Amino acid sequence: MVWTKMLMKTSLVATLAGGFMFFGNATNVRADDRESCYQNVQNLERKLDRDVERHGADSRQAKHDRHEMEEARDSCQRRFGDYDRDRGRDHHDNDDRYR
Image: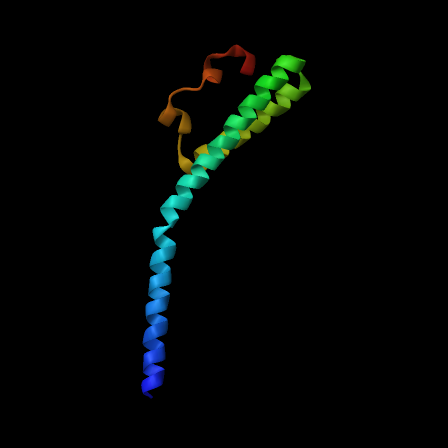
């Protein structure tokens, strides 16, 4: 009887400690996910720049890259908020090559 009570208390304490550790790390993971998401957008912007220089602004490659970049940016904004507002406007917003 004593052993079962001790086992129950130990498992309860271990479960609570694990829960606190898990939820305590949740904010750090979210920050890493946000940075990773927007790093992906920046990589796609660089790819678009490269393909505009290689193939032209109205090329099939540039249109595809533009579409991929906008999808990634929209996804990040839905998940984490407006990144451009947080960091200042991107140079692509004022550049007609990217429209």
